[in-house]
Amino acid sequence: MRFLPHVAVLCFLCSPAAAQVFYKAGFTYTVKGADAKLGFVDATEVGPFVIGQLGNRHIVAINVESKMERWRFTSTHNAIRSMHRRGDTLVVDAEDIVALNPVTGVEKWRVPTNCYSSKACNQRIRFMDHRVVVLSGFDKRDDNLMLLDATTGSRHWPNWVSVGQIAHVVY
Image (tube, rainbow, N blue to C red; front, side, top):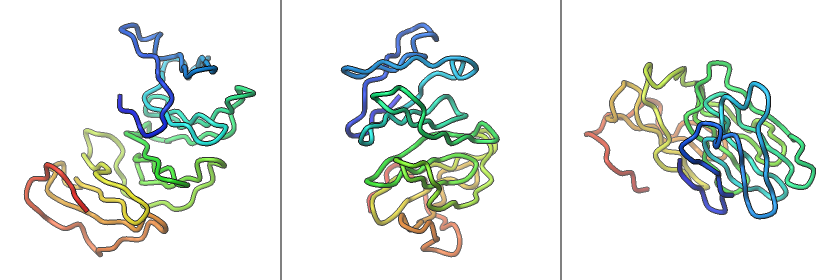
């Protein structure tokens, strides 16, 4: 589990049931139904909402005051590996790279990658800021990079660029 800036605290103990509870000062949310089996993987706070990743299936925005779900993004292939928030954009690393408005859940852009599972590909977001999203992977090794425009999702390069083994990305 990793924490993003201004992240609410996730309650993870040794028991799988502990991951069903999300807590931050003054707010507790318990996942129910089929979602309870997934548990919280990551979370961030955006205005009056807590946005949480439930397993590798859903990203949900929950209103802190009403505890009602505001929006939900679902991966049809259970392929969500991570979510990254920078300003007014939430980028989801799943079967595609998808940028969402974190308040409304509306899709801003999508880059098809056909990355349906970590066994099928190792693509991942290595770096993101307000200008670019840097991806590595593509061929089951960390020896290729792709640079996307963070505002539009368009590729800065026409193809993946082959590089040596990647340990760190600095832009």
